[in-house]
Image (tube, rainbow, N blue to C red; front, side, top):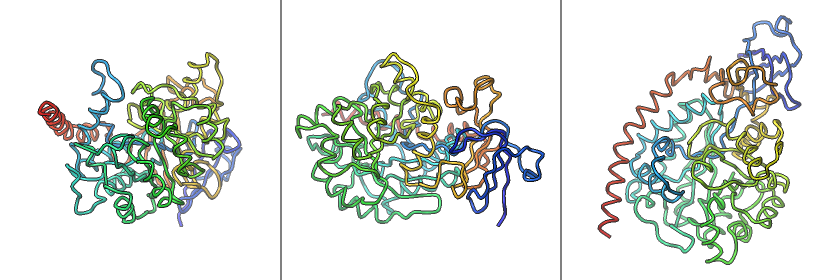
Amino acid sequence: MSVMRYHCEHAWLPSGVADDVVVEIAGGRFVVVRPRTPVDAPEAAGAMRLPGLTLPGLANAHSHAFHRALRGRTQRGRGTFWTWREQMYAVAGALDPDSYHALAVAVYAEMARAGITCVGEFHYLHHGPGGVRYADPNAMGEALIAAAADAGIRITLLDTLYLTAGVDGRALEGVQLRFGDGSVDAWSNRLDRLRPRPHARIGAAAHSVRAVPAEALTAFVARTDGLPTHVHLSEQRAENEACLAVHGRTPTELLADRGLLGGRVTAVHATHLTDTDRTELGDSGTGVCFCPTTERDLADGIGHARALVDAGSPLSLGSDSHAVIDLFEEARGVEMHERLHTEHRGHFTGAELMSAATAAGHAALGWSHAGAIAVGGRADLVTVALDSPRTAGCDPAAIGFVATAADVRHVVVDGRVVVRDGVHIAVPDVGAALQGALGKISAGASETADSRRVGAAAR
């Protein structure tokens, strides 16, 4: 078994930032982590030098890969989450397994280039136009699993149950038909055909209380026992109002009643919560995933991360709609949003934010032995420059407050070099890969949007 050896100028260890750290990797795992070892020490002989600060792999706990096609295209005029959603549907209507694979390879390469070594893909674009099943009913999910392998990162495919168009049980229509399986049993049967791989785990998601009726939640909980499970929760005030009108309780209370809370569950967004909601989530150990760059891009509102963490909810981070793919910005956004709504500074330490971006994110995705530079853990390394215009002069322990994705220089995933000197090994020109994939989708999305407008006019 070959051994790879690195000498990190600085490394973020579980005990904090350490200097002159020799790391040895064999079989995709850390076998030696030795701090305070000068570069000229015998133990560092033959080691590849990593100048800067080397971090554990970052985990993007919430992604919708196809939303990347919307970046820079949804900024015209005014609007809300609901008007943005119409543009998202147009993109969803234009994809097939081949075009989705091409887009996802580019998106996941962009993530790798940003230091992300694992992604949680909240996947609900399952079927063909009109809801027609592909010959392989998991063709779209398989495209994502293959794309992650091609881009060199791990994935947890959070296969998503999506049955209705609203809390009132309205039927799916239009592009939404591609999302639905018709019943929990049909979704479960399709889920059973998905298989984990060395780089891929299978999890589950209930899209939201809008898309999964209360009675279906109970069956969903029974079916997903033991799986990492995610759910969109209270992203919009309108969702809360509809749930109160139909069920007489908040979305969090409804999930609690149906048993969809607990340590294997992650609530995404959790923006508009009551004090009781936060207590329910914290007391049950339910995780929360904040996506600040998307939440502000869509004008969702500002969630209360500090209160949720203090209540007992582990915090992870996601890039969601990919308005930005930069886990440093997501981590920083959590703290900055707290400052905005409290008018005070210093709610999260750098170590807390780094944990949310690394170990907590991996745990939320079912990769418990990842997210730390420690013997026995998965060998992910992300080296960040400390001499860029953004990071020059910073205390390495404060890297989360100053660095961006552009400062990532070297990325190792499970012991394999994926990014070297800022260049993705398999996708050297990520911009060109994105441009090519997006160009093919753009025409189809325009056609889908046109047909939706014609259909709406006809009605």
